[in-house]
Length: 420
Ligand SMILES: O=C(O)CC1=NCN=C1
Ligand SMILES: [Zn+2]
Image 1 (tube, rainbow, N blue to C red):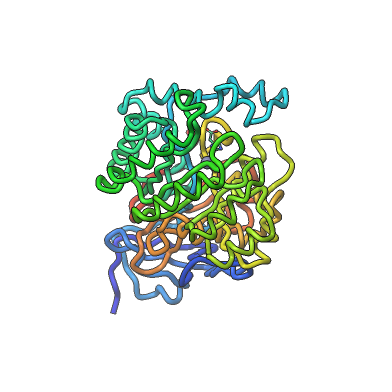
Image 2: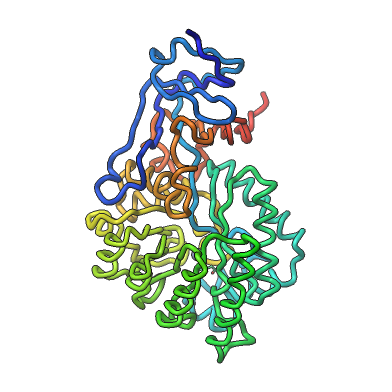
């Protein structure tokens, strides 16, 4: 008996369902499900069928999208962005070219602190407009779910302003957003010699952030000249008591041991991890803390030492990838570019990369059951690529391979047609 769908996506050269019972750890990351010559059925915005053309024989639909043999995958998931911010930092490019270290720029009152000034000065409406533009671009690049951090306020009112901006964007933008409170992103000039007092102020916000459901995660920048491992542990323990998921910017520049501490606290993710030790990696595998790697930041800061992804995968860690989109250390919304850098610099295989930007990325932001896989009953968040196979995306870099993006089964982006 013919079953009627709303949409049938047909003539799919390769369908990557990324179907999995949960996040992929270690060598499991080498596996992914590929259906050649596939059909995908959509009903009421959800995935209702995936299979071969033969298996789809009895299906009918009011709308058909013929993919012409292209690759189809789940929408990409970006588990680490700072996409709400005022101003920009192109003026820092010259300093970077002169080899001025990131932490020196911060110490001189630039870096994050210059974005803080611009964010404090921007209205909520300006920030909504600006971030909506960045989310449009993420969508056009294939990202359908993204995490967004605060952290450019560094005072109660502006941190709340950023969180309210994210809440508004959650309501109005097609990209599904997951909010993280990163009030502990840097030490504001007003508390230059009093970081403990500042952290107390940010801890004092946790009740309101919880009550108003302004964030699901709490994050902290554990770094030389920012917050120590001890300060970070105390702050994250407090956040855990409030029921927040824990994240940490750990061992990005100096290997302070934030990785071990985060794993010890059962953090959902530890991010950056360029300086993670063998012990820290072992502990992350044990605690199933997701390693969110940000190779675009290493590239952009002109560093030559990347996070040890191969060691992490060997040790059985759940590894994911993210853009770290922010105005200073990684100004890009392009997760496809991060896939290329992961292949070349982290030596990750195409299969590991695809798990890292879908299933594992979803797990890093508490969306294991909602995003990163095309399984019956899940939101039909789909990308049709101008490519015949999944290996082509990390291989051919610096361009946008997206042809069409569907969000909840509706076309929300289509590559611009060049007129004759
Ligand atoms: O520089 C920025 O604005 C973002 C950042 N936070 C920690 N590392 C980079
Ligand atoms: Zn970051």
